[in-house]
Amino acid sequence: MNLKEKIDRTKMPRHIAIIMDGNGRWAQKKGNQRIFGHKNGVKAVQEVVEGAGEVGVEYLTLYAFSTENWGRPKLEIDALMTLLVSTINSETETLLKNNVRLLTIGNTSGLPNNVQQNLKEIIEKTSKNTGLTLILALNYSARWEILNAVKTIVTDSKKSTFNIDDIDSEYFEKHLNTSGIPDPDLLIRTSGEYRISNFLVWQIAYTELYFTQVLWPDFRKNDLFDAIIDFQNRERRFGKTSDQLKDR
Ligand code: FPP
Image 1 (cartoon, helix red, strand yellow):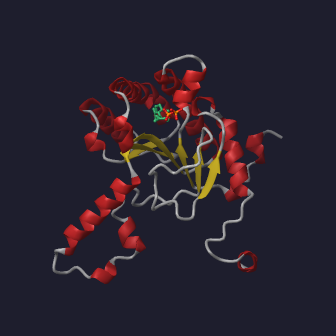
Image 2 (spheres, rainbow, N blue to C red):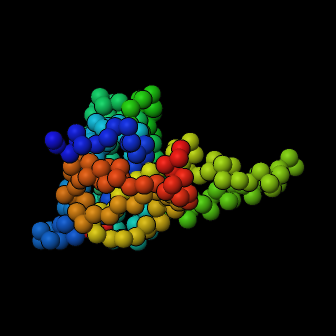
């Protein structure tokens, strides 16, 4: 039985989020520039998008560029932006063929104009697709997202109809970039780092975390399937006891 067949389709994570890490180290190990790792990371992106679609994952969020990544050398930032645009252009047909809908989270208005324009076009073109929703986190950080939500809520609160007791989790979530998207069931981080790095901090309150030593450019469908199988062997208790879950 191959790994894909071992996946229990009745216990699928609806939403998988991935911190794609290790591109730079992968390239340096091969005696190459860091950007060589990013270029090879695109193959891993293609694999997870395809793999997630094949097994019926509904949402896949990829951390492609954090607000902190602006601190990298200009050459690397420029190369990442160029890679993003070229990948969007070369993958549009495949996304359309595979019924993938593309969304973004993050402060995309802070991205270069050509990146914004390319994103706008592909988001429009794929907007009617009903298969996998692929969400790219771009110029994203969780603290930025949460602060942004607070600012909007405070602005709203100046309206006379506002009642402070209306602010519950549901209300708050409506002001996050991920409004309408279920919280991730599974978060994967590659490259053997055990950190969240400002990614989806509100949304991962009950998410299962999976860390692998595999460097992102080496990540393949089978690595995704391994993570899903691991997830399916866990007991998610959401604060309850194991016995309470059995009684359901
Ligand atoms: C982390 O590795 C990776 C990134 C900051 C960028 C991820 C980008 C891609 C995979 C390519 C394009 C993506 C899309 C969605 C088209 P790192 O550079 O931090 O690696 P290191 O920790 O080894 O230095």
